[in-house]
Length: 312
Image (cartoon, rainbow, N blue to C red; front, side, top):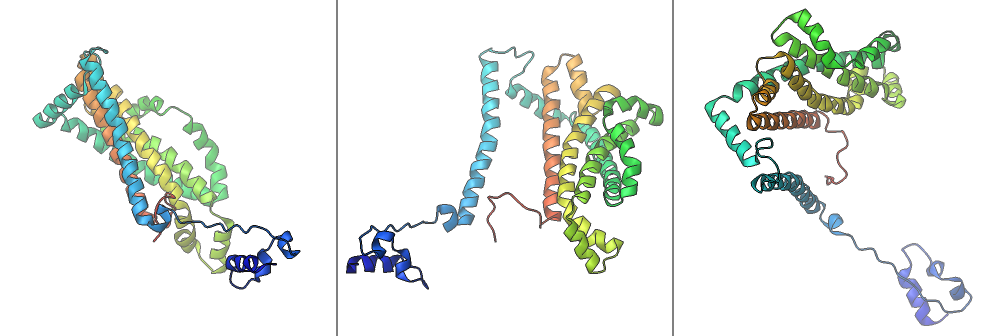
């Protein structure tokens, strides 16, 4: 072996290894072989993960704003160029002006508040009942065997079909609207909670039993933290569905609310007002769903986040 080959092999050897371990068959036999040194350089995300994460979040936010903005501009252009009938599909500028005027005159807020209070009340009742039933049915096999067939049968019934039943039970007013939202939310939270509790790893349960945890300690220190992230996912889905259900219900059996505003303005051929109501429903749904998501993140700091988040 030449002195050049010996020096090259020594430079590529790692600490604690004999240089000869890196030589090819030709080198061990006294021949010559070319030595390849592979160097991996860290990328920008590895050198400065915080900055890379901020840059990625800025790009995601830009895309999230750019896509709706582009669609709105296209809609505005189509209305201005008369590609669409502006009497049926008013321009976004017309909708914005009408919504601003109705808000300034105080005509919009009563409908927004009527829908919001029904959603909050129904969501709170449905979430509480759904979580309780899901917890009991997920933890106790006999309770699950007794109630699951009945709840499965009720789950597939369209919830709007229950509105006449609630009207007979509670009469006209807020009762039927709140009951319909609560029933809808109940099933989403119940299913997600029961599945989350049943999905808790057996090793976690056994660890609690080894440490002598009682029923309350088992719930507080094992079942609750292990199942809560998945439960909150179901609650977030239920938040969006609650808004959908209340709008549909208000179109049928209500004298106020955003659903009534949309249906009534369509009947009177006030399409600009109708779109104002639709935009308000969209904003309400997004805000409500993101609020549940925000609360969930604060309640479950141990839950996994997106993979792009920098580690502290």
